[in-house]
Image (cartoon, rainbow, N blue to C red; front, side, top):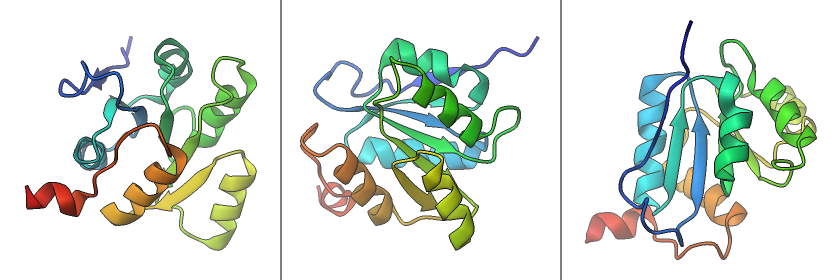
Length: 151
């Protein structure tokens, strides 16, 4: 039996004022890049490679935002989105589609499925930062990646 595994950022765990982001991504390199980006923005995060437990994790941790890959083995991101929007404990959580599907039709279909935002891979950290700041407005004191690199 395959056990889904997820991990939570160690740094920032203690600071409950920082927003919590659930990232669901099956490619290790993309997952690592996303975790670095979120940490640089001052977010706490939980990363998952398996979409089958996303609803359970979202219900338990109540993240402020979910970053969800669309092309996942097993349940697709769109299938997971349907589950999230049907559950009273998770329907209110904003969800960003993070995907390699980049055509205008793909984007329209994804947004019509209920996603709050869409970002295509590969993405620039500034674009990711803008989406996170827009969706989590007022939930944390944001620093741009550029400002953090200047310290």
